[in-house]
Each structure stands twice: as structure tokens, then as C-alpha cells.
Image 1 (cartoon, rainbow, N blue to C red):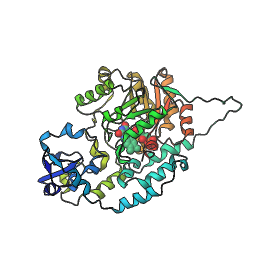
Image 2: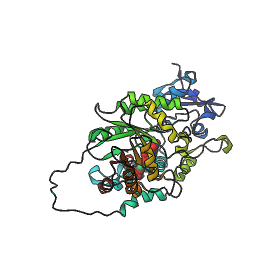
Image 3: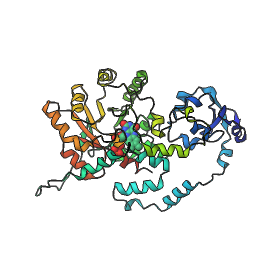
Image 4: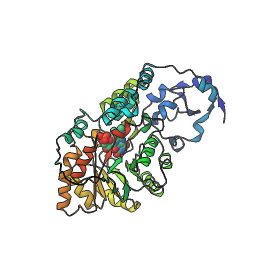
Length: 421
Ligand SMILES: Cc1cc2nc3c(=O)[nH]c(=O)nc-3n(C[C@H](O)[C@H](O)[C@H](O)COP(=O)(O)O)c2cc1C
């Protein structure tokens, strides 16, 4: 491969002739620029420079080989020269460095709120905005946890609790506790190892990890990071191109994934204003007019334009025909839809409003759980049909409440994300 000097690469720094460096290789993105799903501005910001740090959290490593023709690779840069480029500490770098130096020790962190507080300080602004944001006024985000505060316990005493076994089964897998790590995109915004950090944690604790379609790591990297007997599930955003969807599903099954969770609550991405603001603060000055930018609404919007808004119940038989994995609908928000899912032959549902990131004023899942269980029972559909919930789960008592009201287990999103920095 041709070795290029940094000076040579730096010359190609305009919209009509743009090269960038990713992991030591130089790519000519001039033709690709208008097609970039994340818009042109973000690429222009790194014109003629090394874009690796910005590229990594948003793109799995195999995306270049999948989407760019080999001839756009112009060569490689001299690694030593790249390493010698003086890194200027920005105000944000300094803030993070100081926050990391003053981070409490792990033993001093008692609960998920403690992790959240530290995460807000040590994560980059764009990472925190993406992880914490919710739709519109973020009413559902807050309600997700607040709803647990309205549920009180009926403590029974004089019961032998000398031995407590929290293990249970989820879709046939025995796990150590009724908790799984749900799918959250862009893990590398929080840690350079991205979702693999959660894979390792799940393996150590014998719980299940749901792999996101939009992971920062490639699917293979996440599966390769698991222990031999560790169970993983796949969260699926259905692509408008069903051949792509079929490929993802059959490949996941061939790699041993044990459950297909089809996300149903994102035909249109929620309006997450915190995330949208970050995008504007980071991009290059206005070298392009707004009309040049097809998608200008934050990291979430940029990475999710392929999601099929026509997905409907009529598609379930097709999914059934392409996989033997249990099919679970993620993002159910009413008892009526839970009943339809059961009648369609799905193996379960996740009651979820996507962590309040999609439709603001969607109810919290704990609020509708009892109603869902009753409706399934009334229709005789509750046996063997697994109901999970996610959203706002912060403590063991929240999990307890969910189980007492009929859930098979719960998923945690942000509490896992903010603990992996
Ligand atoms: C940063 C972030 C990214 C997410 N990405 C996805 C995703 O790619 N696919 C999906 O089905 N759900 C996604 N979710 C929703 C979660 O799977 C889950 O429903 C939600 O996080 C649960 O709420 P909690 O964060 O309060 O635990 C995401 C949530 C967050 C916070």
C-alpha cells in the first residue's frame, strides 16, 4: 500500500476533493460525501485530517469494507508521523481529564444514580447528550422511573429467607437474576471497547445481553467477545430492504443468538433535542447550506434512516419463515398490542417506550404491566408467553415490583451504559 505523508493528505481538504484518515488508511470520500447518512458537514470537519476518533463511536469497523469500493483507499499514512501529531487539549478534554482524576473509587459508588452522576462528568458532551436524551419534553423519560414510586410493597414476614435464589429462565436460558442488558446503540461513545464491555460484564454475571443493530462494534466482535456458553439476543431494526434484514437475522442465528427482538416503536425517530443541539455545536462552520444536508438532527437520526416505517403485524409470518429463533416484539405500549403479538405467534413482548426516547407521553411500562397481564390471561394467552419490561429501572426494588406484577424479567438500558465508562 502506498505510504502518504500527512502534508499530502492535508492538501485534499475541500468539498470537491476530500480525503480523510481512518485507522491509518487514507480514503478519498469526494464521491461518497453527498451520500453520507450523517450529512456532509461532519466529514468536512475532518477534511485532510485524521477522523478516527470521531468515526469509531458511530461506525462498526466493518462498515468501510461493506459500503465503500476498494479504490477509494488511496494508501496509508506513516503511522509514526500520525503518532507525532501534537494533540491539543481542548476545554472539553481538560474538563474530562480533571473529572477522571477526581472520580470516586468503585467501592464508593452504591447505586445507579452514583454512576449517572459520574458519567455526566466524565463522558464527552455528545455522548452524554445521546445517552441521556429523551423525546420532546422528556416527560416519559422521567415518568418511567417516577411510576415506580407510586407502587408500594406488601411485606410479608416470618418466611424462611435464609437461602435466596434469584435465578430464573429467559426464553429457555437459565440466568443468575431476572435482569438483562437491553440494546443501546453507539456503545463506543462511552468506552473505546463499546458493547464488548457489556458482553464481558454479562458473561461474568451470567445474564443476557441484547445486541443492538446499531452497535459501535461489529456484530462479530460482540459475539466473539462472549464466553462459550453465554447467551445473547439480537435487537433488530427492520431494514426497508428485506434482503438485508434476512441476512442479518439468519447470520445472527447461525452465530448462536437465541432470541430475535424486533423493535416496533421507531418507525420515525423521536425528536431528541439535546442530541440535536450537540450535533450543531460540533460541526464545521457553514460551508454547506442547510439544503445540502439531508439529515441534520443528531446522531440518532443520522444512523437510523434505513428503518422501515411500513413494518406491521402482517410481516410476522415472514419473520417466522426465516428464523427458528423466538420472536419478541420490543416496544409494546398497550394491552391490545400485547394480545395481538401473542395471537400472531410471537413468543413474548417487551413493554417499553424506548427509554422515553420515541413518543413523549407514551406510558411507562410498569404502569401498563398489570393491565397487559390481565388482558393476556383473559384471552388465555398468558401461558408460555414471556412479558418483559424496560424503562426507568434503577434498583432491585424496581425489579421486584415488575416481577410481582407479572413480568418475566426486566431490561436495563442507561444504568448499564453509564456504568461502562
Ligand atoms: C442511548 C440509548 C440508545 C438506545 N438504542 C436503542 C436501539 O438501538 N434499539 C432499540 O431497540 N432500543 C434502543 N434503546 C432503548 C433501550 O433498548 C431501552 O428500551 C431503554 O433504554 C430502557 O430504558 P432505560 O434506559 O431507562 O433503562 C436505546 C436507549 C438508549 C438510552
